[in-house]
Image 1 (cartoon, helix red, strand yellow):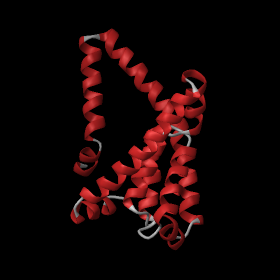
Image 2 (cartoon, rainbow, N blue to C red):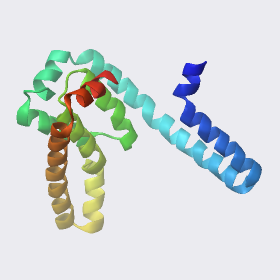
Image 3 (cartoon, rainbow, N blue to C red):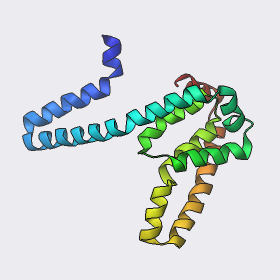
Image 4 (cartoon, one colour):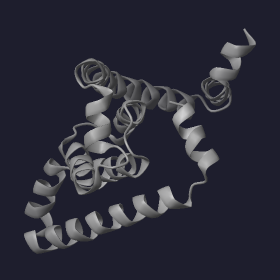
Amino acid sequence: MKKIIKRYRVFLLLAVLNGIMIAVWPDIGIKSLMITKSNMIDMLSVIPPIFILLGLLDVWVKRETMVKYMGEGSGLIGVLLAFFIGSAAAGPLYGAFPVAGVLLKKGSKLSNVFIMMGAWSTTKVPLLLFEASALGVKFTVLRLLLDIVGIAVIAYFTEKILSQEERQEIYSNI
């Protein structure tokens, strides 16, 4: 029982806070519950397909293949593949975390996973198309180039700054 409470402590705390808000400020509390319901429906429409695809990735792609193309010795191919995975992905950023976990479990280099996460959040193809139509191609290309350089630099330095213990902790928490 303690383990379950510890695992879901944030959820339980928010449920209690929502209960207090309903008791003290009913209008705000009910609005909060409606927003929570809407967010849950959004998440439940995105997360299951991602987990199905991750299950297929886990079964279909061998660890040796992942290490070869995105592992420690992958070089530029790993970086480009990480950018491609992140840019081609669909769904909100919280969908990238399970993908990152599977990539790490399969032996991907930490900086390549950071690149995939950065690309997922900033270089999605549909977002670029909308941005080009709304803000212009010149702006979109400039932002994309700056994002690509920034993501790669941040990923590289983040990996270098992490101590061996911190890296081990990341891999052990998968």
